Image (cartoon, rainbow, N blue to C red; front, side, top):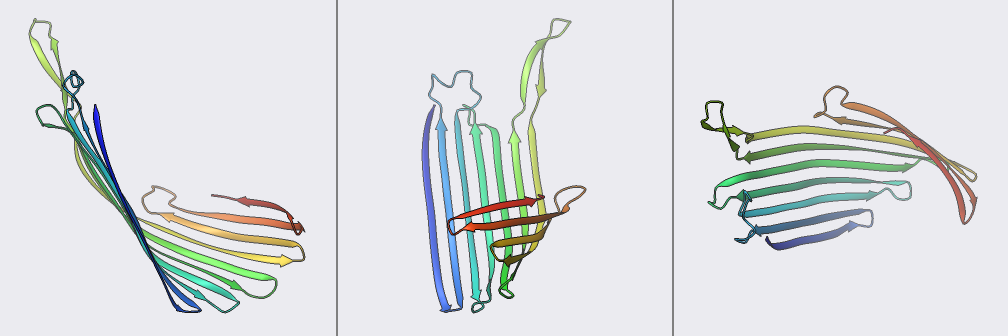
Length: 231
């Protein structure tokens, strides 16, 4: 079997400092993986496929805005999109499709996070995320067959397997969290809670998870940390 790979990628980043307190950042990352499998004549004996094309591509792009609130905190807001495509085209020696798979996933979202230093003791942090997801799956598998001899001595053919489906799915994912950190002497205590919602799940599709942690700055070069969380 001969495989011919072809890979391409792309990346770009643009940073624009609107002012000392405001910054815009654009980021783009993508990749394409394209492979062609071809069987030689001696390798194709007994195989159901002769040529197979496999390609997949993925990309992510986003735009973020960071705002520094002087020395008291900051906020970061971003919009983003993720894309994933997966394609398989397998054909037999007669160039008849035996297996086809075309899957396309899209994700569109917005994320916001803010941190506020209330005073020398307390720091409040919170954020939220919303994602809209679409999934499209087209799958075809040629049915197979076997010959058998029935009790009357006649050869018959029995077909089995075979898939031909076109499925479209949409879902919404939401998330939010908040945490409060308190610093007293050489100790830092943090408590918070996170909420996650995924509409695709049946039953309990909204969950809450607590978070607590503690740190002891034993010395300038040593610290002890402990945490607990429910995910």
